[in-house]
Image (tube, rainbow, N blue to C red; front, side, top):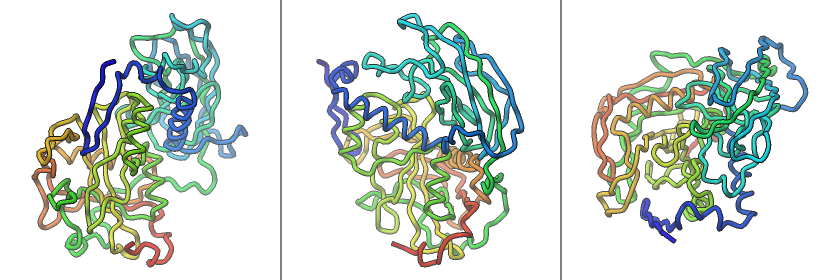
Length: 409
């Protein structure tokens, strides 16, 4: 059997031939993988509501037909964060290698199907799926024969079939879509672009390093965004925007990466190297990927809780970069992630995904006096920027508990 050894951030990954991993796994592992993926998918698209009709007013009702030769259908519907999307689907599809027709719940995935990369890997081939927003940033979620989904972000609603362009089904699904107003008390609103945010000034940036560093003190990624808001609010806005929390335990992550074979979900949670700010490693790591990409592309960022407040509110300091492949680490000749040198694109990507949730109140950009405009990471990769730092204040950041709750660790 062919074998492959990878070294990423100093960790050795020993993998057998990818095509045989699924066949060697005990059945209980397959169930665990799908359960984890499904749970992650639900967490990132907002809460699924009970079967009862939503209490809000219905503002739109529409029916479309989706044929098996389509990947995605344009519904022509724009939804707002917090609205209920009540989807009911009927019909049948047939795949050439399938023993029978399938309905919008899809074909259950077995060992022989593990290596097929689908828009939503936690669901079966042929399942009805959806997404809200731009294709390059929108997480795909399962709809099936019936589902009431609370829209996690605002944007254009697309309905699709969980299949690939080279393996299309034959048949038709009829999809009925009802859109209901958000639940009472839901607090979603468009982000407001402002010239300045109270407390975000030169004095604040005098306390914030321009770069993070590796364990030996070598300068790394630039600090390119700030978030003002409570810890629960920060976690919610990232989850709703489709970001996945990255595992902190390297060994456990590698094990699940092997068990998951080449799935996008496993790659997303592969560990980030520990970097330092204020004398400690990141408090959070988040990753986001294009819907069908596997290991070629990963948007990722690190967050540190600042040891000081902004007007009594918790401040999170972030460094975001976009993985576009692999390269040699100049420090040790290991393999490491190669980042897109235009780091402003990733800063803008963070802004686009988070503001779409309706949970960001104000947005501004600040250019520090000693703005960082170019440099090299600790691994040797170069980057450039216009020097501006993105600042986002979450909608409920003013409702936090006492200042002591947000003080330094």
